[in-house]
Image (tube, rainbow, N blue to C red; front, side):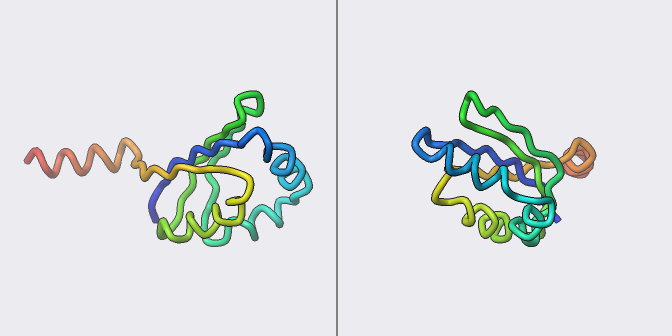
Length: 96
């Protein structure tokens, strides 16, 4: 599994559609929408028309498939990230 940092932007002309869709989703809907992606945390800045999430997924393709579901309402960036422990282990191995 790999961690990804997501940042999405809500175009002003699409934000009410996105709010309406998101507000009607149950936890089950959210899980089905995400597919093979585990949401670890999600944060919203409604006034700034953006948000962030950290998710865990076996492939970036799974993350892209999930975000495709929202493609007509948001723009998104996907950034692979690592934990402190993962980076520390990698750097330690490289420095030895």
